[in-house]
Length: 247
Image (tube, rainbow, N blue to C red; front, side):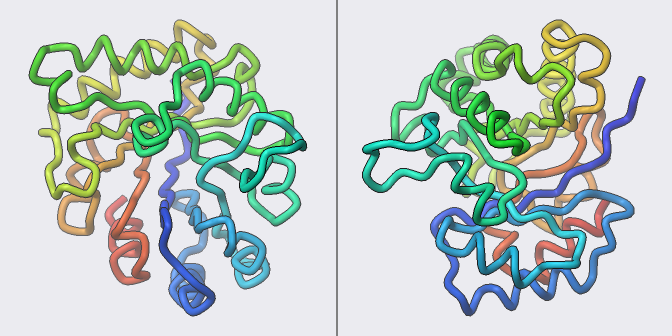
């Protein structure tokens, strides 16, 4: 089996101004890209400035969402081509905050993935169940169906990652047990192999949901965990570096 290169990606969400670039620089100064790929996904307003600030470092700059279309009358939206032009190299898609707050379906996420591929960017596709779905014993079914529905056939042979983010763990301080994480990541891996064959083993499966320095080592060394999608803890260099060093 091909072991994927770990990816630790920070999702700044709607946080950060020019002053926050100092935190990104502090991260870049202390990572070398040898043990893992490291990415920071700031708000769109900072992508170009962060790309310039981190030029020459191994830290990858990403984005948090995009529109499916390349251009058009879509006030306030941003295309994958625009993100690439600003310096982004990867894009987070299908985050639960987008699925819930903007009613994004698996089909829409899949079309956004296709748009990201069209622009030559790398997608991080998020999947995850709600607390109600987990309590009802539906977690595995929900997540595997989301994985199938959100990943278009065009991903075959392309670099991508899947991020498992249980909705009930995001920003709550709660995390699944290690066996629960391993069960879900193993199911996602089996789904990827079914969709894309053995070459999909190169795609890391990230865990996201209240990842912090204190729990990162246990999570990152669980079976089939190929990195992390980090929210609040990625806003401060010290916390984010603590997670990266836990690999």
